Image (cartoon, rainbow, N blue to C red):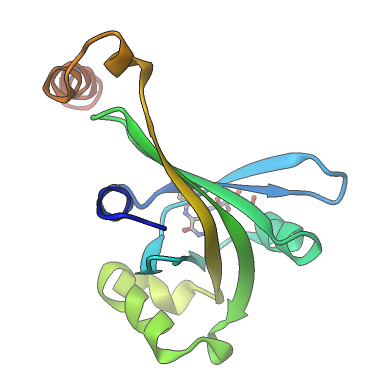
Length: 151
Ligand SMILES: Cc1cc2nc3c(=O)[nH]c(=O)nc-3n(C[C@H](O)[C@H](O)[C@H](O)COP(=O)(O)O)c2cc1C
C-alpha cells in the first residue's frame, strides 16, 4: 500500500493536509504535522488541538491526507478511515511510534488519530510533464525558499 517512495516523502514531510467530511456533507481540510508511519497500511497523528476533525470522524470516518514535498514538487495522497484513540486505549507500538519524533509533544496529545489506509498514490507536478528534471525543480524551489526565508 504505502511503498518506500511514499514513506520517505511522509517521513521527510510529516505535515499532512487532512480532509474530513462535516455533518452537512461539506469537505473540511485541516493541517496536522505530527504524522508517524505505523506500518504500510497505517498512519497516525497526535491530537493536540483538533476538535473539528475529531467531530467529523465520529460522524463519518472517511479521510484523505495529502503530504507535499514543495521542493521536489511531489505529493502522496492517502485515502482511508480515521479513528480517534484515547491514549489509555493506544497500544504500546502506537505510543512508541510517537516517542522519538514527537517526544516533548506527547504529553500535550490527548489522543492519537489512527488512519487505516485503503489507497495511496504518488502525485507529481505538471512541471515534470513540461520536461523539468527533479534536480532543476529542486534548484528552482530552493532558490524561491531561500529568497523567502534567508534573504
Ligand atoms: C502547520 C500546522 C500543524 C498542525 N499540526 C497539528 C497536529 O499535528 N495535531 C493537532 O491536533 N493539531 C495540529 N494543528 C492545529 C490544528 O490544525 C488547528 O488547531 C485547527 O484550527 C483545528 O483543527 P480542526 O479543524 O481539526 O478542528 C496544526 C496546525 C498547523 C498550522
